[in-house]
Amino acid sequence: MIITADSKVLRKAMIDKGINTISELSKSSGVSRPKIHEFMREEVPLSTTFIRLCNFLEIDASEAVAMIKNNKED
Image (cartoon, rainbow, N blue to C red; front, side, top):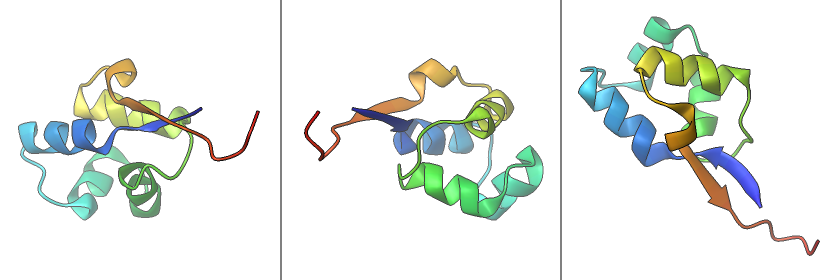
């Protein structure tokens, strides 16, 4: 299993804060647009950058994660 961001939770938090675009979120939070796009596409594992984004959006990071099944056999 890979743990990634749950884009639905992030998008809801953006709406709750009145943030309409990734660019606006990037400028306000200090997290780069490419990194936010990676989180929204659930492409990258979590990092301290994800925690910083969650703190800015005032959401609990543990509620903003998704478990994705890894294609490789363990």
